[in-house]
Image (cartoon, rainbow, N blue to C red; front, side, top):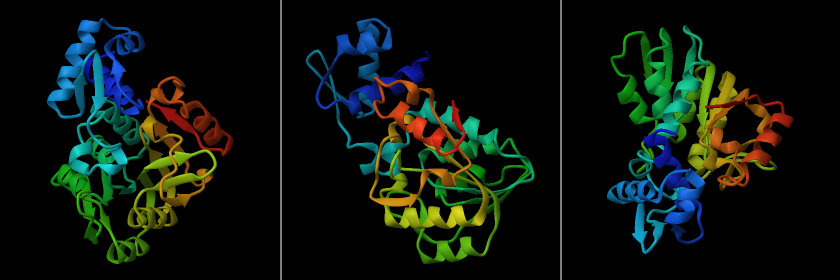
Length: 262
């Protein structure tokens, strides 16, 4: 496991704990020395993502759904970059793509830049910056209101724009994926935009890291079976790190959704 991936997993373990996580426990779970764990915790503390306490660490930030884009951007960056590469590889050159907002889809945008020629409509100001002036990318910025703290484009103007367009592929990020309650989001505005994207695309690929599995967010977007593929990280299969992961993956497959692990 590389350093970036190990930091990602360390952060997940600390954030997922009800209370303090000990250095000894992290050492055992990660298969590295306690000295390595201490160095990793020091690195995460410098980013204000964990707080060191005697013998271990506690999370310093709210769960990801309660933090804005800037706070979430460095979290699990290595994992999200793998997801971005896997999703981009599923997009055929020449396609018309709708790219959702979110920290993971910014990584998708980075990898889409090498898949041109593509027409890419973005729902994210950050993705727009990433794709601007890239050779082979015909960039469209969907109109709308920029949701404060999120850099996502939402509201009636965004919905009207989407309703006037047709896409070969919608790359949908998601706040929660639940075996019984399907795909869901924490914001009504984001959920409405995703529903419009689903309606206007021939094919939808959903992407989320394993922390979203088993989560039921505030606003339901759609049932599980409406998407044509789901990309997540291999941690989803680890029931110890993600207790809801294996069960949710099983429900996705039973709903006919191909699952791709990165």
